[in-house]
Length: 342
Image 1 (cartoon, rainbow, N blue to C red):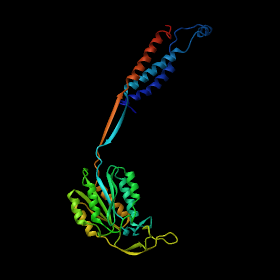
Image 2: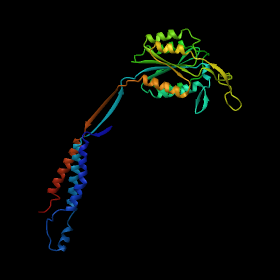
Image 3: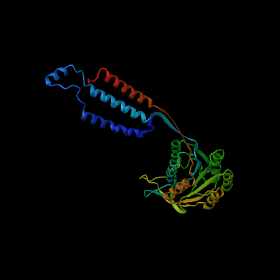
Image 4: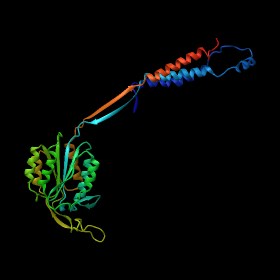
């Protein structure tokens, strides 16, 4: 329940109440009977029941305060808001091939693998778009659905944390990843549907070529932003992986690295983006990758319509009735029980 005043400017008059009380107290009232001696006044005062003058003045001031509250029109009710449109439908497709173990990124000066950096940046991107339905597709030799399109971003973040290199057979099926993402987006009725595909390699697996998948995305009006992540040429790779697909570590717990070759099919990624009316980006460090997702965030802004509803009931009659009632009682007492002698 929410309470408010429709005309709160009348509440300023309440400041006059203590002023009136102060002036009334200083001035006092004229004597009704003059006594030639204090002894006679002392005898008469023994029959006085109370201080009716002060009591009646207080009643009058309380009544005036209540009438001022009534003029301010107190109201009680509630307000609510409802989102009528959820914005944009987005699928994040992320490469989980073993090449994502390359340690050519740094966080606070410390070398880290590509996937760790990508997950951190994707987490921030998801947090910035609370009104968009977002899904996640991961791929290596084949794509698989990590999360369907959802507005439950807390659950989405939990699924993002479970992304791990080596969950499926190694390889890079870019075309199949686009096809799976398009299948998730094509039936949606959102005004805008986009795919953000991130990879560090070239298509070498899958039954559909990246070019054909891009044509399908364009046919359904799905813009596909592509991001090539990592440096080309020699980059630090783990020297080997254990039976669980994790990098081998030395006795001190450090990952043992050796130089390895990294190659990204930038031309293919550029063609995919151009075919769908989107853009291709290249990220070789953390700051650049953050800027890329920020740029996509600016390019694909949601248009959210929020419907506000409010319902309030006037309650001025209650202080008005109480104020008038107190005034009536004050008048009756002034003419009867507390009547002053002339």
